[in-house]
Image (cartoon, rainbow, N blue to C red; front, side):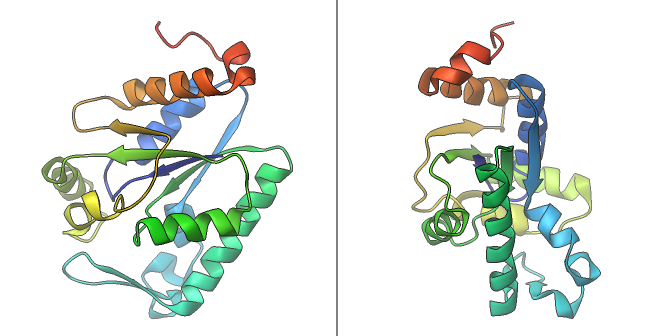
Length: 188
């Protein structure tokens, strides 16, 4: 499983889609947005367990956290059953979130990727999207990376999703013998 961690509007979803096209085999992409879409009111209902403050802060209830742990466990089961998964994630609590995700997934072979983006660029993307609470991107741009250990990092500020995907694919090829045999050459 490849875990892409970055703030809102950092480009994680675009990098995940580019990875799907670049990596050998069929990779499934899931993310925090997938989980939120499954909540009551697609996350906008008071019953969802998630509150988006006007300043961009995200507050989570204990019930939300329990459901999220079940979600992670299900993803871990998919990986254990042989599925290749890219997880598009926002670790709001930084290193504590990384420890929690590791424990919930129970997966031995997690590849941790930091997806960084300049806060001003992320905020501009957020404003252009129009589907996010203003302030989330800027607030999360560095906070989600606090104390998190990565295998590889990319920066979408001035690099395209395809360029970032190539960096990740090159890393996988250099560390995973099977990926080195199967992966297409990412230079062309």
